[in-house]
Length: 465
Image (cartoon, rainbow, N blue to C red; front, top):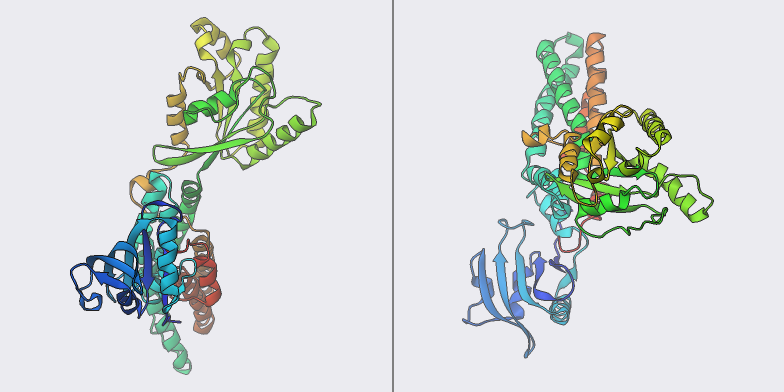
């Protein structure tokens, strides 16, 4: 599977900019670049040391395409483990394409999505979980997802899996050895130590599996649904969160007829706020469709904010009772989700008003979406719903669904082995389950892999990485 050709791709975003970087990797990267590079100092590119930078011109025959800086990274001390050339040229789209087309005509081919990182994996520069972390790092848009991706790319997660697999492999070898002496009824694997190892592996796997609940929301953002009756200030609250006029605000009830979503980072954690259509009885078909989507978003959300117009509560005692009923209804339908009752337009309420409201409603949070009063306190409250303890303690957190599924399968096989030991099953039967556990752990780091798996993973990368 080790490639022998030389690939090329634009490593910076396409379009015009100050500079662009074009990357070549492969056995002929330096020789191909040398054919079309004229150093200002007269140096021969192929004779220069690794990790050096050289100023000169890229030329197509006698025509100068651009003045560039060329960086040399010689194997095996490069990102891919191959010879790499990086050309820093001016950011004109025309110049980029002229240089790339020149090299394509002279021995290079266009890199596939993620092929540079795939080559790094195939050449042993990183394992599969580290390679996947590269994509996560590129897409990270808040401090928490960046921290997790960096930890995984530096090998924190893969080292933990490799250590477990090595210990299990040692015992598996002893069990396999017992099969060769089955007629002599001997045991090479100490059963007491084996039980202790299985218990420890089970504990670690469960901890990693449990961390996925936190890792998944950190990676993808925590969906927060803002719900309530029409014209209570839901869109104004969304705008207050984002500090911009993202949603249309009007005194006319039913202005928001579809869901509006946007994401911000609070305390390094991504929150995806969903402004929903106001819940009410309506004959308007379009508004009715929006209200239907509101209930769908409540199902998808992990936190629900029930917003109430505080200025109207004191003029209608029935409304106070209706809000209490609505709160309990949403709570009963979503018992596992945090539900926050927000009384908006707190700037219009006196302390006496709040005391009257407090006699009918519990767990109240007051704010004014218009003035911003209470919005920062609400942001801090939202952080309390996220278990960031593992993140603060720099513990391993699983964010990848593929890893999560492999961990579940490995745990299932480990528990089968534990049951087998309790029931005193023969070594050959336990060996089958141990092999399966080793297989699933190996899938995570790439010690066990296939072309289809690699194709699925690297197809999600950007070209040039």
